[in-house]
Length: 381
Image (cartoon, rainbow, N blue to C red; front, side, top):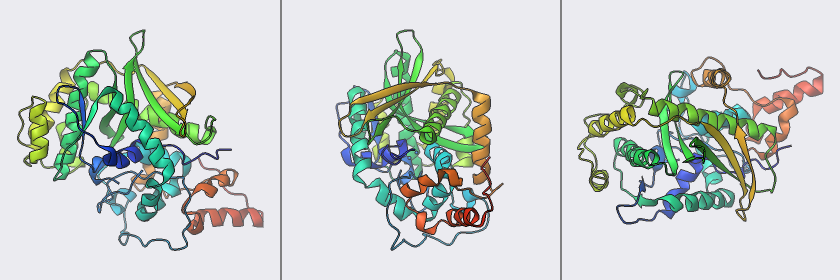
């Protein structure tokens, strides 16, 4: 049984809290820029999205709903992407579905509950471990962002700064990855990319645990999905599959938007002469097209104890793109409105003990009633 759910830190959760630990360093060393609202006015796959609900929700740490916050807005008809006004999904949104799809949906409807989760001691402790690792390989520089275009520009600058590091055979951490998967724009943040002694490019995803043990099957399934999606996104980037129109159409970003002064200054320190968001987007796409970086060879999950930082174990994850895309299509069919959100089977009702939304979950009540009346619940496909 998975009793440690919620003790881990997702990419989105980390980036939400990271703004509170920002530090600057000398230009010249590889740097990662953050605007304090990374992943589009965060609350990253986990924080509360902005008024547009544009970031991922994490889940797991239980909070009572005695005084449940009201919804931010009246939900409208249409697909969840339309109802929640989402221009894209985070990897952690999709991985959350592998744990409980209804929990993800409730998280978008009640973002204040998710915000309390992100402010928890467990999440902050995990964030400090992630930040310490990031600072081992590059400085983190706070940069002021004044628009959505600025916030995406900072992601582009981070990627542009990491391309030559990877070309030189070195390690990068907290690398933004994004692209279109099955018709939907998706983004995430890779914990670490480095080369093995064999020259293989290794994706290493760090998971912090409250208990000195490996996760059970339910969490393991979500973790494997996460690193698989990261590989799809990264491989698509370095293969030059990302197109300019993906940003303009999916994210509704304006190529003619002038970059803010903070972003412009940071770009100039990196030796880049750009004036508008479109200039930087074109520069990114050109660099990705001709960077000749390898695709990811190895997917690895690393587990460590959150309190002490002591290593627990490392697992390599096999990659089957066909199977992964089948699973991805099933998850995305909820977001596109092809089906309703689904909760867990009665056999996995133990998950509800770690859910913030247990008191308002109709799915759980219906399944329990079915068990009591002798009508078996349907297993999720």
